[in-house]
Length: 467
Image (tube, rainbow, N blue to C red; front, top):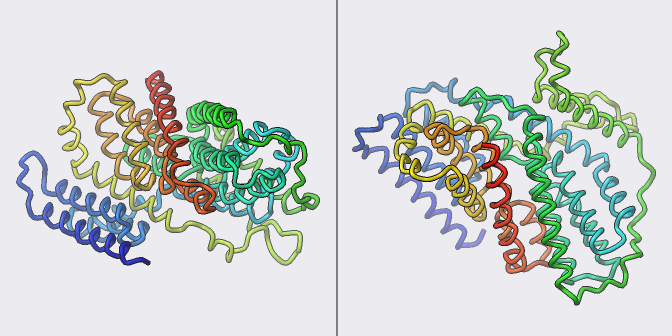
């Protein structure tokens, strides 16, 4: 760790502690109760520590378990309950499904098949990679999707003799952006989606099923993907210096015949998706009336530990492989949900809403646009998960105060949190491709700024129509 990073974290630590102490002992507001004021001080402490990454963000997410029982009227059991929210188990099961797909090699086979069959021009190559990245990131976390496709893309560029060219830069950018866009499409696609579903269930008793999410998110993300393809199409066409001589000869390494393990994982995957999509029909049977999306995810994960692998010595998944699970993210969700619940229960949410009455002077379209705009550009420098955790309770209060559907407004903001395309630190897929050192920051900024603006307009327009 460099000295500058250490200093940054040190300043962040003391800045957060100072804000916490000043607020804790200086409540002069008569319009807010002491418990809500305490929750506000805890919230700001966590936001500052998340921003400066004073300690791992997952550890910061444990602060509600420490501070809320000590400083408020909430007991430990109440505070701890959100850490076991059903949405967390949905994400857990989804991650185990993704790990099984990766270990079997099914994801790589799918990517190679698409590219070798349909990649016959620079535009079809680009479209193939974008579609594979988009579809894969629906089911596998977008970071893993980018990591999977990156070496394949680099190999393609080697075969086509377009290394270190403008096309290679655009191809790598398209992979990262499509992974982020695809992650918007399903609940398990990216972390903010899971948090939002848990937040709605925990605080408003609104349950959003896997299919209900996709009915809205899939068309929105598909429109954004289509627009992004046209942006990349324009940029490639604009660069006359891109060599088009080698596009007919792609000789990627030959994959072995599909294995029995891949077939088993594929069958479980198909059954899982079908169960999520048709859960409403399955619930009509008495013995499946209590079947839920998290229950389906955990059942699928459980099966991987029962179905034997082709080598007969192991099952499709082994517990030692669960080291790949992002356990910290599950804690982060729980901490965010606990904080959000405290904001709503303490009365802090109502107080924040009363401070935002000036918003009544603006149209609904303007408010949606402002929220989406702020979310997209704030996510360029903040973790999209941390931003969603901090932002959603306030968004919920604004929506209720103005009589707007909180689920629609919240979903628009959460989807926008996945649409930061300008900086390497904005999203994990951006960071993955930037780490190749084939892309400069200005390359990403030039394309990403266009993507940001168009995405803001699309999300604002679609969700305004839905209101």
